[in-house]
Image 1 (cartoon, rainbow, N blue to C red):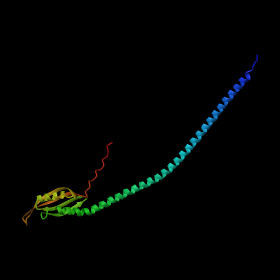
Image 2 (cartoon, rainbow, N blue to C red):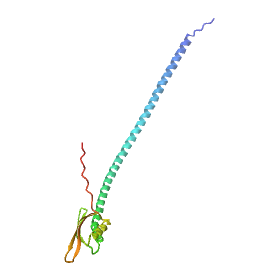
Image 3 (cartoon, helix red, strand yellow):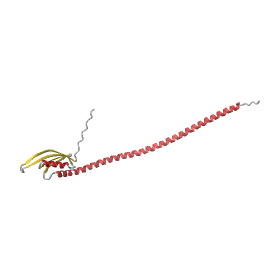
Image 4 (tube, rainbow, N blue to C red):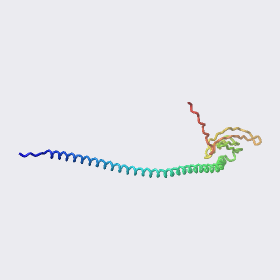
Length: 195
């Protein structure tokens, strides 16, 4: 019978298995390091790209800030110009207002039945004194004044009958008070809040 010594074959097999395992381990480590290197390279390039984007966006924001600042200045100028235009319009209204007011008063006076002795206007409050043939004429005059666009709130302050002996005539002296186009309500003072 022939005897074969298989020990060196088994030892060679074990050696070969160890070598294969070391090769697999080594290749796994190389593969792991290459994956880590690729991931590091990818993340670094992505981070650099994001930093460039951030820098570009910051530069754009600076230009927008300048634009927003200019828009704010323009809005402020527009507001000032509108306020000036409103003042000009108000001055034009006030310039032609007294003429229209006197015209409206003249149109409201009943002809040859009512005479005005004084007309006084202060801050939109108009006071008129005069003489009329009778109380109905004063009422007609008040009604005519109420129809005007420039006069409102006509109020009779006093009316007195008087006799003119030379002409044997009874007349009514009156005082009217009303508000004009220039009248503005006084703003109520702010009330203090109770604690």
